[in-house]
Image (cartoon, rainbow, N blue to C red; front, side, top):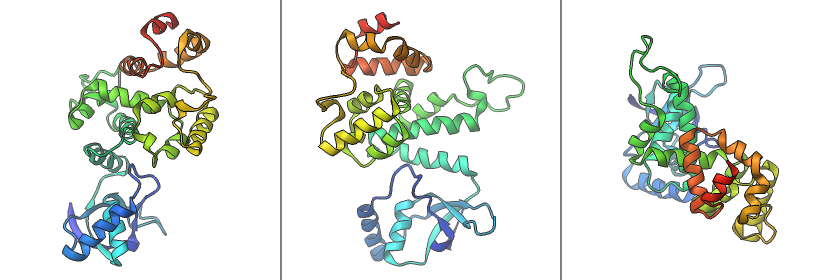
Length: 272
C-alpha cells in the first residue's frame, strides 16, 4: 500500500456503519497529539466506485484519526490506499477491532457474527457440508471458527458462544445498547436474547434504560426466567428456535443459559 496525502473532503468516513462509534473525547486526545507531534500512523482507505458524485476514497480504518484531523483543522491527511473490495475492507476493519482488548461483549459478538457472514462469502469452500478438498479447491482454507479463534487467541467454543448471543438480539436493540453499560453485561445480553418477540424485546430494553434498571430487574418482566413453568410454556417454540442453530453454537448457547440461571440442564432434557 502506498501512503500519500489526500484531502479530507475526498473521504467517505462511513461513520454510521462502523464497528466502533467514534468517541469524541478519544478523538480530541489524538487531535492534541497531532498538534504536538504530527501524524505518525496513516489511516487506511480504499478507492470509491468512480461513479459521478461518488466519494473518491472510502475509509477502511482510522476513524478516530480522521476525526482528529478535522478537529485540528487539517484539510488533508496521510493515508495508505488499499485495493481491497468492500467485503475485504470490512473484514479487515473487523479483524483490527477483534484484537482490541477494550471491546465490550456486544461489540465483540457483533464483530464475530458479521465476520462469519463475510468470511463464508469470501471463502464459500469452508461452509459446512462443502468438500474443501475437491479438485476445484486450489487453496486449503481454514474453517471460520478455527480462523477466528486463532486470530483472537480464544477457543472455537468461545467464538460460537459470541455468535449465538448476538443472533438472538434485534438490530434495534443492538443500536440502543451500544453506548450503555449493558453492552458489557453478558448475563443481561443473554437474558434479553430470551425475549423472542422482536417488539417486546425492544420495548423491554427501552423501558429498562428509561428506569435506570437492568432488563432482568423490571418488576413486570415480560418473561420470568425461573421455574419449570417457563421452559414448559415456551416449550416447542423455543426448542425449535434453538435446534435451528448449528450444533456447536447451540451447545454453547444452552451452556451459557444454564450458567446465567435462565434454565437448568434438567429443563433442557425435558424440552428436548
